[in-house]
Image 1 (cartoon, one colour):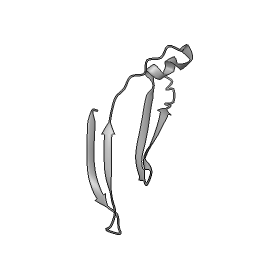
Image 2 (tube, rainbow, N blue to C red):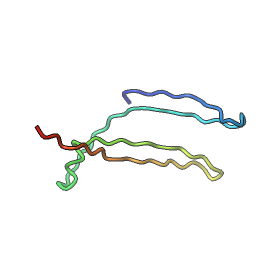
Image 3 (cartoon, one colour):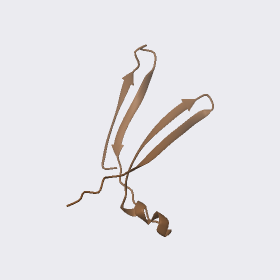
Image 4 (cartoon, helix red, strand yellow):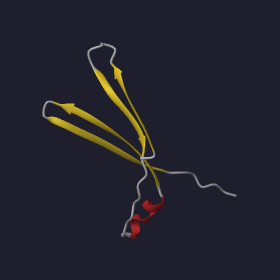
Amino acid sequence: MTFGGDWFQMDADGKHGRVNFRGIAQTEYLVADPKLRFLESSFIVGSAQVLGHENGVNIQNRQSLVITPKVSE
């Protein structure tokens, strides 16, 4: 984790609130399959959401590969 912050925010009804967290982490992909080798030099962003319900907790995680345009010189 290279940066992080969290805060608590009340909903408009004043009865419920939520914890917000923002962070930046760095990880490394090491792959053996040549078809996935591009992941080792890719920029990937993600987000996660923790949802509580009567049967427990679910964590939803999304990751997206950032594609940048090639710049001609």
